Image 1 (cartoon, rainbow, N blue to C red):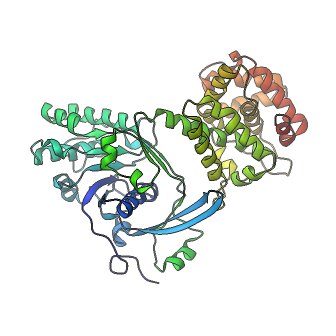
Image 2: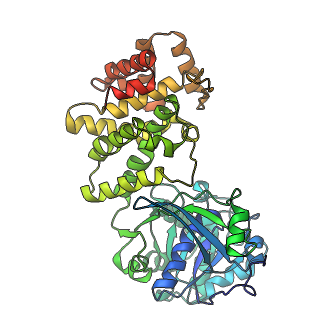
Length: 479
């Protein structure tokens, strides 16, 4: 089997237009795959220079393969299984700014560079007052970015057409706003000239984005088969689902420079990412959070099997289409398309997604993902959403621990304070006390949920049904 490098496989040579902070699986299977598609289908004609954001990383591995690797997309499309393999050649080179600082700073001097894209984990967008302008490099990602921007400003004498477009992909709401705030903090901390601050404000754009693609990463279980199929010893294969969505809060002129939609990709340039963030949290994370305890307590372990189950499948559909969707404000056809895509993703034939892996920290997840829907539904419909409330009762039951009907151990995992509360409440054996105590736990909910009209009575009723009939029979009562 051949090694994978530019001597054994064709590799395009294009102008370096993108600096990418991060070399991990997600960026390579999402952003670099998108740019590769843009090169194939539009006149973008740009390559990516990868910068390793921390001292220890994968750039040596990448350079060892001349930055060539395969992306394996798996999932369903229009009900049919999809399993594709594509060789991505969009990364020109990969740098470690800790050992190649001069080469890193020289990126600022390249006139064709136009975009900066990052995924430095949620903790990466942070201001560290210990960073200095003369550090080689600054330890924080925003610090490195300001070093680069300031050098570019100086090198091109503040030329207005040399500003950069910056897309952070870190998984925090309004990531662009947070990054911009950090940049201004460094400009002030390092006492950089007002003219530079004005150049950054007027000539650079930092835009909030929302990214959505499940990327399991290196396919350990399938790697031998994949390498056989591609005829290369590729040690950087990335496996991901075929679904992708990138929402970018930026004006149309930015879209013109980054023509992903022209390439037929699901990249949206919008005035505000907030409704899309809300849609994802509500219609993807929301159903996940309640289907998991309902499925597990019904004896079903895999998300896909839950979707295909005669009863639980109907429960998921009810929560998704009849309840959560009714609480959002985007156009109905757009919501239906997204909701159907989510169910297709849950039904991925290639991923055995364990429901127990979703059960970690279920109470805080319910608070952010499902509780807003409970309140809006009540406000709009004048009644509580039965599926979402049944999901809460299922979480409370799951946290009782013990064993499932088939003898499988139930092992809840959450904040010790939450675990302790549930243990004490279940020790009473009284579902009224359990309901009162869980709903009153302001340290979980930020409020006393006993004040939501009818919620206490419905949760108690569902808890009793689950204890008396079992989870599956309890679910049947609301379908």
